[in-house]
Image (cartoon, rainbow, N blue to C red; front, top):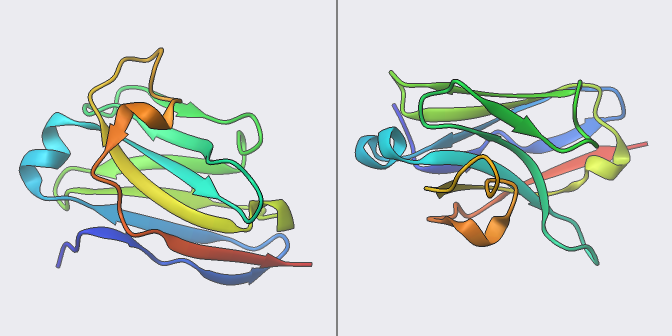
Length: 125
């Protein structure tokens, strides 16, 4: 069944893969863009990836481009973040959120609301 919030985090070795999931109620999912941010100890909140409500455009931080892929499944009201070739610097708590922003603002966490509780991703050397 579809569950609200983030899931599927965990502990992996360098070079491994994880897929994070973020579910929302149907009405929220279909009317908002969605994105992923992460927060590491001693670091500021960092943009990771975002996808428009129609799924026609995706955005990525330079640090994850080519390794991470964001997608959405309308049948399950769920956004996924496929993370490949994980590195220790990817270690953080990952959060998903919703925004009604534009392509110019979706990289800014201040435009988001309805944050999930976060899921821990730890990448060991």
